[in-house]
Length: 319
Image 1: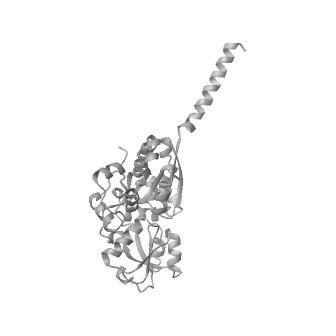
Image 2: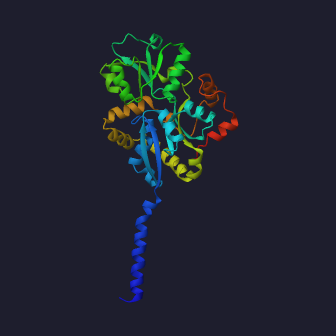
């Protein structure tokens, strides 16, 4: 083999080696903290990754699940993750008002019809007004369920005992064992127990007037992450939007059902009965003027955030 042939061979091998590396080099990694594994709205990143949508946008997601929005926000603010999915809006505004460098990159859920509060079927509690002296569950401090329970207390003048119980599975165990009087959950969790008449719903998140029809959960990051990984976060949002479209197809529904190992009928009921597509539109924070007033009324912030502050905290990447 002459030198020219040998050189050409080495060049071809090197080019092939570099070409083989390109897919790996193209994948930027983002770490996510996601509240409540399996809820329809919190499953967008998981479904999109399983369907190859995020990979197509050059992203590999490392997804960590938390017991609620409070834990999600803490992980985000500490720098343990790049993005917090389903952080409660009141918790985010409260953290920002105290100087945390939190930034909003999208709405996560608008409206609170998916969240519900329940009791054992044989409980004497028929409505929230029957909860005097009773324990009333929410997930974690600063979460959307915490905000809603706080609103319940104020709106109905309740003397219940708000209690952090973590995620739906642990909460159900506490309710069924009598440790907690009123639990909380979101579909698909609890649908079997409802159908089997083991539990009974007494309220939904929309019964809290300040949350009805307003954005209640967010996609959040921090200013340092947004600055250092702006391109990756822009691509994350493009893939996130594409995944939402995918999830409202039969194929997307199947990916969700297969992941959770639940029947497609239950997956469809979760989506169609509780999550109209517009409820998870990431590009629109609904009711912001009212939300900043409610944050003060519910004591999450000391003062209403100004327009300048809102312009700083809300940085949703363009479509």
